[in-house]
Image 1 (tube, rainbow, N blue to C red):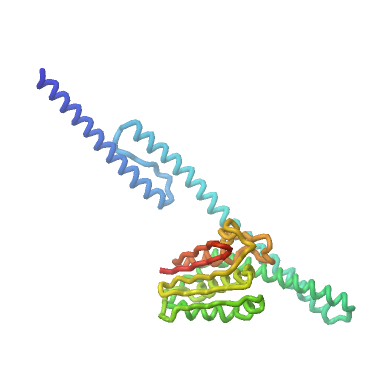
Image 2 (cartoon, rainbow, N blue to C red):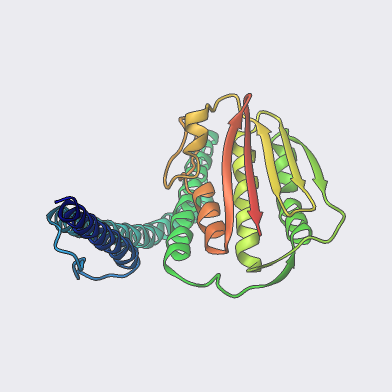
Length: 292
């Protein structure tokens, strides 16, 4: 009797062990198939080799969730493409009337008018200039998102490109009453990047600092290639600062900004294999760039 019970116990144990092995194998199958389906565009379901009802239910639930996720991805991609197209079309459509307005303003400028009328004309011209700048920014943003014009890379000195960008904006920095503090590593720090993309990233971040700085601006490049742009920005807060690199986000006193400056910088940084972080600490805005 004891032998019979022992044999039955061994048989049950062996059956349970075989079932556990089968379930573990199926879990591995689900894990590997899930990883493949997350990387490829396919509607193929998840297949498992065991017949356990719970495992089959898990596979079926994952199939349903994957299909929903795929639908959301398609909707997001379509919406993003439509937004890019809309931005491009709007910027193109605005260019034509702006060009005509410029022509009429030039004609008016050559006419005799009172001092008051001349003052009003100057105000109109200034606002048209602002609209033109915003339109160009929208157009450049759509080009950056839709084109691969920044894929060609070369070995660049980060210090050299950064110095060129600082020099280009130095007059604007001083005119804004900002006293810059610049500390660039003397050691050669080189990265394989697209020169135009790197220059655009630096220029957009510097331009952003000119808009939001409270009178100071620090630029640092260390031996590891980490670039930090930092300035006092009391009108910001941690929430608004974190959103500065979001598409079309502007703070309340954005001063005519499209909210695309840091968004373009982040997009280009990521396209060129880098990382951009925006932090707000103790009333200071800090933008950090790093390409490994």
